Amino acid sequence: MNKLIRSLTSLSYCVGFFDEKFLTADKETRYSQVAWLDTGDYRDGWFADPFFCDIDGDVIRLFAEEFRPDRGRGRISLLEVEREGSRFLLTGVKPVLELRTHLSFPYVFRSGGTTYVLPENHKSGKVTLYRFDPESATLTDGRVLVGASLLDPSLFEMEGKFFLMGTEGANDRRLADTRLRIYASDSLNGPFSPVQTIENRKRVERGAGCIFRTAGGTWIRPTQSCERRYGECVLLQELKYENGLFSERCLSRIEPDETQPNSYCLHTLNTLDGLCVIDGLSFRYPLLGPALIRLLDRRAQKHTANG
Image 1 (cartoon, helix red, strand yellow):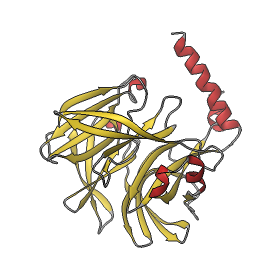
Image 2 (spheres, rainbow, N blue to C red):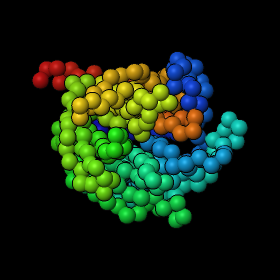
Image 3 (cartoon, helix red, strand yellow):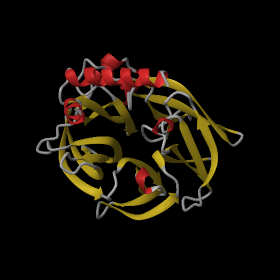
Image 4 (cartoon, one colour):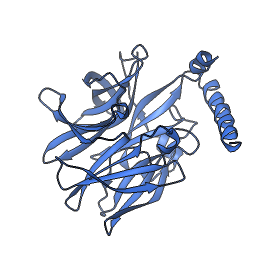
């Protein structure tokens, strides 16, 4: 029975692009403008968690989780995409990091002209930062920042300090989206020490993209809303730092439009040079898959309510 359920609810993620101005549009307008990646000959797997590496004219490079059903786990790959008018064509895929454990969420951090990647590898029990070598197009010099299991870790620099954030990869997975651990260091080389924990009864703390600063100076942390289901939509959280402590408030919700392709869930959003990249979820069986997921969700919620 479990094997049948997995087959009926099998899913894949597709990478999509749209102009940054559509972040403020209504979801119907926004999703009608998404240009979904044309994967060409790369049809034996799917890509999720896209993060910009760089944009050079009409050539876009992305770090993403590459998942192949025959492998059963993700790896970090560098995707090369060519923009042809309103089309985005995948022209190259190069694995840049592959370990025995599952890899995802290749968070990109730039400092001093160097690009770093901070992937999720919570089974290893540590957070490792890699340097991207543009000449060889590889991730090198892996350096452990925190010896703790964090999901979807984020790294950014503010007021002369480096901050690392991630939701707790606890044995109780229900805590993974509600408890945000924050570490700080005076140097990118560390050591990083715990400075704060943010508790939220709603499941909205898991990271969903790079922390960025708007032209007006507001810090934004994209997060996932997992209140109803994992990776349901993206929240844009205003991140404030006062008196040595962080606080957040939700500015907007970037919700999928289920009337459009690849739009059952949305759990990653990044921007660079006026372009946005997202990942949209689709089902092998577009009608039966979501219906079965909702039924299983209701049963799980009822079971939880009954203790």
